[in-house]
Image (cartoon, rainbow, N blue to C red):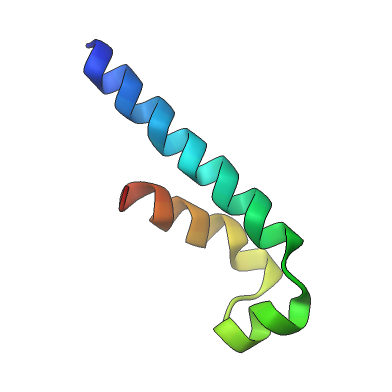
Length: 51
């Protein structure tokens, strides 16, 4: 149980850090990467699952 909780917390941290990082990126850079502002959460969720 503790390992599951620890793993969920680690994935949540990756998600939050990814969202924060991508929100700081200028729109032009996001566009170059093919990401729109509305897709930031989706990309962060995917990044957290690949942890």
